[in-house]
Length: 342
Image 1 (cartoon, rainbow, N blue to C red):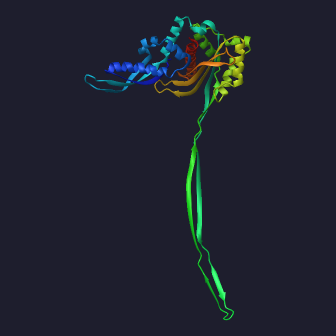
Image 2 (image 1 turned 60 degrees about the horizontal axis):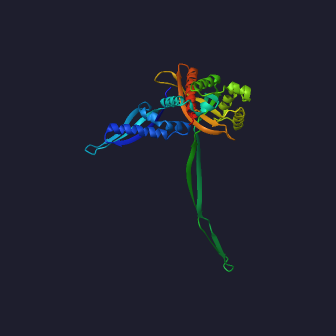
Image 3 (image 1 turned 180 degrees about the horizontal axis):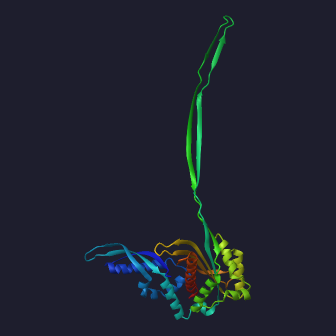
């Protein structure tokens, strides 16, 4: 399955054709700016290989804007949108690695790797919570009655006067409120056939002359946990991470077995929908791959990557299986690039 990333770029030259070619190079540079770690290092060390084959790497080029002036000193500014063929880049990296003897990691180290996978089982959607508020204020003002009287002992007469009572009442109402929308919650289950994914990754690594230790050997000789519980813990994790104590204990046991590098790949299928173009079920998801160096006192990340993937099939479960198979292939390619350190 081809992996692509979309980029934009702009360049200016004396005519449209040369400006477009310059824009392709600029798009390539913009793509490099989004990379980091081992993959970027490997590309920069062999950049001429990629520039010589730029037409196979910067593909689906669309000119979205052009401004050209005529005359002796006329120029043309071209803006493009293009796709970067990451599958071709990974292929070129593997070829350069094999030509140079398989890279430092494959020549010196045995690699331990673990694949975890989870698939969406159900999704809970929340209605928008609306809170309404109203405040009322009532005010009263006025004057009270008063009276005075005088009496004369001589005449025996009395006089009295009183003011009428006057009251004014006002009312004011202020309304407002707020609303809160919760993100949909996805419940995951562990992928049952994790050994198949583990073997797919291992096969690709072996084909690229990277020496790996099967997980079952680590279980027998190093005391690490069987691979099934890892996927279960991953499926139950809200953060998508293994518990720190489990991860650190695994690092410790692998290091005690004198292995210096460890690869952890977490893969999830988080959505299903019907593909309107084919009528097939489309399963999609993403993965995170991290390479660790275990030679120091603490495990140190030496590279990481995130990729999206998908798979299609007539049945929903088969679409999920196809998506995970594609994910395993992409994960293995990423691992090859991360371990071919210069």
